[in-house]
Image (cartoon, rainbow, N blue to C red; front, side, top):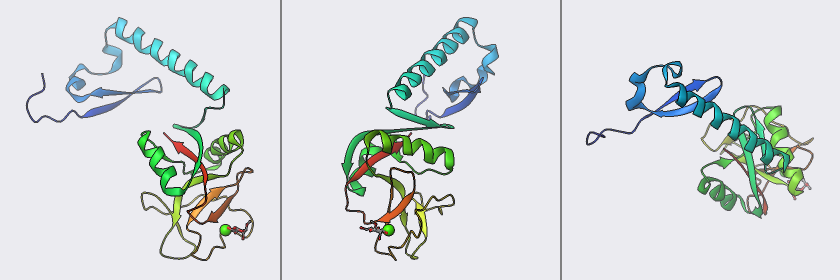
Length: 180
Ligand code: MMA
Ligand code: CA
């Protein structure tokens, strides 16, 4: 039973690298190793079946993965605001590659759809400074030679189909690549 007003907090539990969200009211059940063997078998089976499904989706070019991130696109080209909206509606956000591995994973999707892709970052008030959508500063970059050169007039960022980046006006239609 949920006592009135009690928040349904979730705990992140790591089980053999398989992260599970467990309602906090079960925290007193202790580590996963103490769970009923049938429950543990069920978890192992779910893990196996999920990784099999991810393998199929990756094989088909529907998702790409890097570390804990999953990238996917609806294949549509839209302006920046619409691209961000469609990612958020799906429970994700626009892809913001934070290292070379993630950049390659986003590139896979740009190549799959043969379209330049919007990235989840924008130029700040300070010309030439780019920030992620949560306001933190962009560290890893992969600018095309001599970019960014929009001098404050190109506040969005597109990924070319070779993985390099260009600052660009936010009104052009580009592939919405999301991260989850
Ligand atoms: C050139 C280059 C870019 C700029 C676009 C805008 C094709 O690339 O000047 O920096 O963003 O033009 O059309
Ligand atoms: Ca540019």
